[in-house]
Image (cartoon, rainbow, N blue to C red; front, side, top):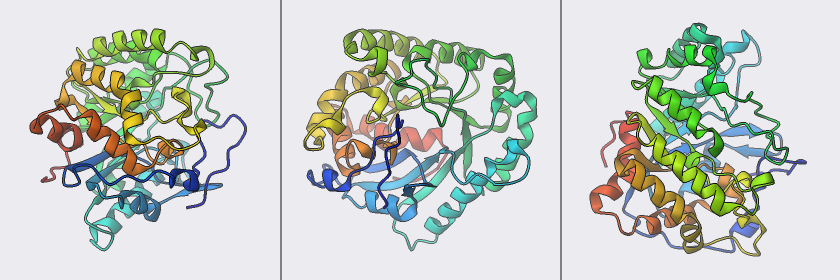
Length: 349
């Protein structure tokens, strides 16, 4: 894999494979079945992460049975109506899934579920986009992600994604959101922790729409939030508990290796081992599991985005350390069952 360049004020941490290789761990509980419900594929200038790259990460001793692809602004159509161009991503990913289904790329069902993008600000006009995704997905299309992560702090700004503030409350957005449930489609919520209350209001308004909160709700740790981890945690935890009262909302446990979270793993001389990650993440993961219960929680890798902070195998070891006190049934949900049900994969362990 070509290592990504780090542009000025990049929202992504560069992947340094030589740095990652300094820490290698054997897989804990190597027979525990896992569905990775959140990864990306793309071919961007200076950063290519396609099937071979994903397979190389999966080859780390953990029993990855299947994966779910989540929208990454990749392989959009170059022509045609603007609102339909994201359908190109679903066409591309369904092709990768078909390659995996041939069986020649290993046991895991790669991209068994597909989450794409549709502009919900189209209101009821988003129907034609959703139907196009369903046709392109070959029976694998499960939902959409319309990124709403917004903050006016320039340190947090992502030049590739610039949603206006308050998007979840906009009448047009909600009109488009209303089109998901009739098509049995879910919504992926990627936002920052101050926006969680807006998601709670949305979930209460649309109780029939399955929603999954990405990356434990994006607790911020840079810019104006730097050095305020205890204060941010208290605010985040209160919002998480309120959101968990909505039975249609699930949460992904992961995505804490990004620059915006401010843990600073990338600045250390050696990459973190699984014990170090588990220690740093324990308050967040335990709060989510306590609030939502294992049946509404799923561990996620968020690769390759989080690969700037740690390797794939070390990540799953950290998750297993965090689940040490769970029962066999609870572990089955956290690593496999919740994702299997939410994305309607119908896979056997």
